[in-house]
Image (cartoon, rainbow, N blue to C red; front, side):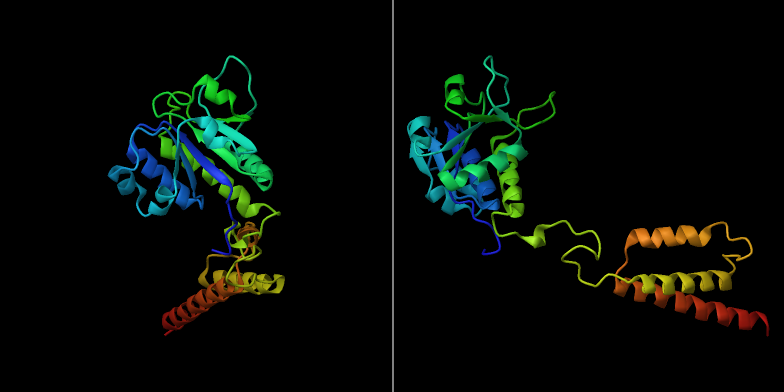
Length: 264
């Protein structure tokens, strides 16, 4: 796990979860994202076999979960409290989107514990509970169907925190999680083809297309210009260049064989 940044100090707080299965699903989402600290405010039923069943291997998160009687106790030692809310409030409150929330969590975590607070499955957090939060965070879901399952909401938030931590320069960067599109990107398994490789490929391609009759040098129709654009846009690596050259060589052999047969 040394390649993964630690998210120690990030706490997920569930306020009065009504279904133990949701607690288990949240524990699974937490473990997926490398978060282990769970606090439960007056859960209807916990511990519970349904929570363990839904945790699907995240039993350690459940075993270490702390059960408290009110939100204040759950976040008393936190330097930042961020509450999930899908509703607009009469008093404007600082609001984060999930991506900015991820950045905010990482900024504040070195100062002390940070809590992400999620409310009841049926009606979320109360106004009083939301006023205890420094920020509210909202998922930009479909406005016609914006209610997320509790575990889904937790997963979205923790995913954004994790993605921010993977690319945060203050952490140990994880280049294996960088997007890789072509040989010029870190992590590609072959060296990029050189400009000379490209010229040899295009010369070979033009020769083969002329041999097969597909290309008429007297009426080029910008064919080779477009083929150049295609291959340069693709950024093939050296192995791919060798494969392409091998394919052209096989076509050359077949064309010569057929030409000899036609002259017999």
